Length: 420
Image (cartoon, rainbow, N blue to C red; front, side, top):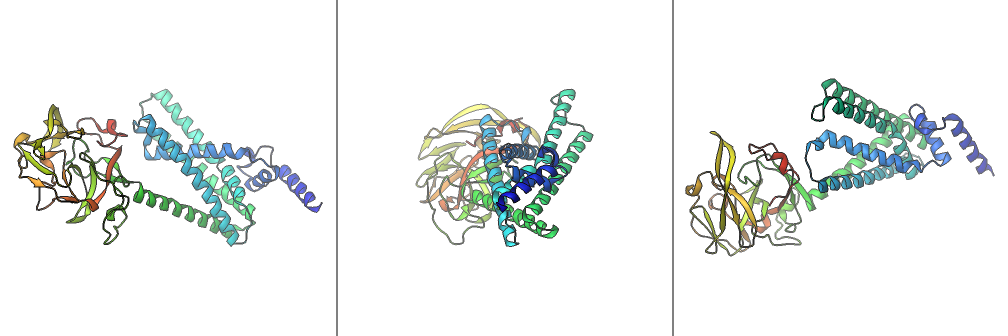
């Protein structure tokens, strides 16, 4: 009976202390609002608020990273959106769990759903600011033209709105945590800091696991793989393609030998690896020779086990060098397995490494070439480069997720494509 009276009193107090809509009271009376929300059972709003918060967060992050300027294919946008939504919800829930843990260590008793309600309702200013900012940017595009960049004053106004609304959301969240746990200023700050640090640690742990077992980003530092990969290209390397070896893990794993869940590379694969002579620099080349193969180049033609690899002439490829922009011979090679790729030969069929001795690939190692044949240090240079051991492979080159504008005008068109 006493508990029922206390519950009724709390409900009455909350309803009297706050306006009818928490969407209004949240801006200036966050403590009373969270009491009203929890007392009157308005949690069905949480799903909508969390959905709006996730959408606003993803849009702001995409804008800050400049993702909207990339002409990504539809499947790439769907994948990014799905991954972003899942991760946002997971880390929001983790933050609530960490808040509950930190609060209990300091003597509070609020539950994880209580913190979820506080996080959702405190996002109202952030969501509102995002909507206003997008409306301003959309109006600018409408009146100035779709291709016109927003004026500097508008960019500053949008930034000011987002900063102000984000800070106010944080202030509201702290007031709500204080009321939920019955804490003063410093205990509330400590609770928020501990929860945020633990959440950030979880994010970094996820990044570390992804870079170790799934995909690791790399940037192309030279033109030895043109036209497949250009200087400045950003691409992912699949760490699971060939299993996990010493160089699959951060900082390497000492004297680890062999590979776990090993899978054999195929001719034509573009791979990232370290050299036995240099385990500080990552190289990217194409595998053309498997263990036991006999590899030779004669007059710039590639021979595998005594058979010439099919080569088809293509229109010249435009590149930049010290003398300016020039057109160089371009060909399409097709390996016996059917894998095709383009190569360029600045010096034609008479380059320094256009004719070589026969190389017999040792067991457990691979022969690699750059697609830019006259500007690539690769397995042809036995004394300085040589063969690539299986255990030195990092992984297989995959998706190009960023690319600079090239002299051939291919930069943006290659974003979202797979390395072939």
